[in-house]
Length: 230
Image (cartoon, rainbow, N blue to C red; front, side, top):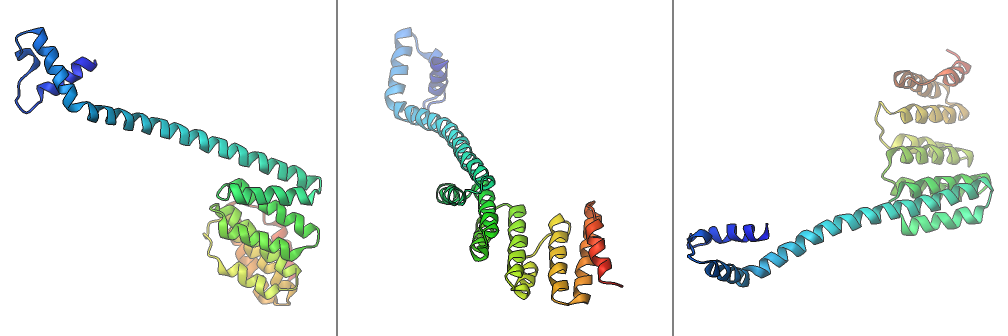
């Protein structure tokens, strides 16, 4: 096949002289040698580039898989440590993920776990800082919405309820997203605790409407709404 390709290349040369036009086999061989001397650098370069591209893709895929597996392993250890209430291990694994696998979804998930661990230990500010990291660094919209909702709940728990409401209203969200209703429910809870009954009713009503559209359960929401009266 290589000889045939070379013959084809010679046939398309500037002089337009085909291989069959040479009178002897020796002339054909000499013509091939001459063509090779003039063109071998281009041929070799093409082979190197082509091979490099193939190897590059393979190495990229292998590296991507290895990175995902490593991040997954750290995340699993974070989850196990959280269940065992080993806060130091949770902290250490999360920091490793942030340093070496910042863009991985596992890192944001581990950070959410770390935030919960801190909150359970009474460190609300530390938990809020971890949730803010997720908001600023994740590419996953679901994880971002979860971080916002949990952040607002912690702000409310820390007697920063007005700030919590502002946070829930500050970040735009798709009207069809299930998280829209969850955020509205949390907003209604906070407004109700502030004594802003009418605003809380409105938030609950919107949450119920959105949840029905999304096909979710509204039982708890309806109870909260009914408790505020007509």
